[in-house]
Length: 143
Image 1 (cartoon, helix red, strand yellow):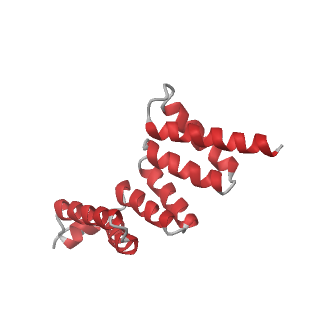
Image 2 (cartoon, one colour):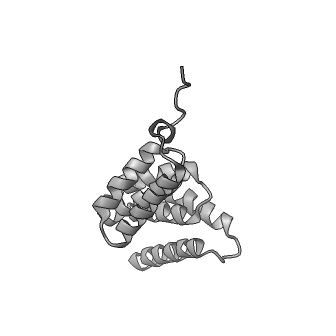
Image 3 (cartoon, rainbow, N blue to C red):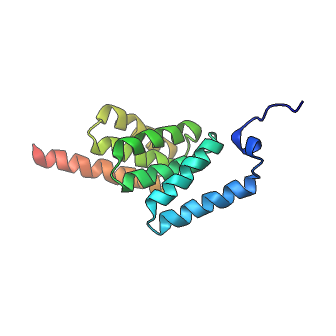
């Protein structure tokens, strides 16, 4: 008797190259503005490989563009749990939390983002710095 499959990819006998091709197809759909189709492909990829953050990140972007902010936030959180060092995902999640006025959640994300790029050379960290400055200015003007 054969050993049980370790994951869905193995169970379906789907080569990783085919999974990667499906991910590229999802990226193409996303780039063409076909967000629902991209999201469907990405959901399937996530079901097949729960340990790869890439489809989660793209799915979160799809959800965000569809104004499904809570779902996007949850999906970004799942992606960060797998790939906590991705500064682009970190700034996207921090921005979502900032816009939702979840400051207690946003501040540690910005702190982690800035700590990862103290020299200020990474575009995602610089985006975070711009966001913080903009919100600071907005609050200052409201006083």
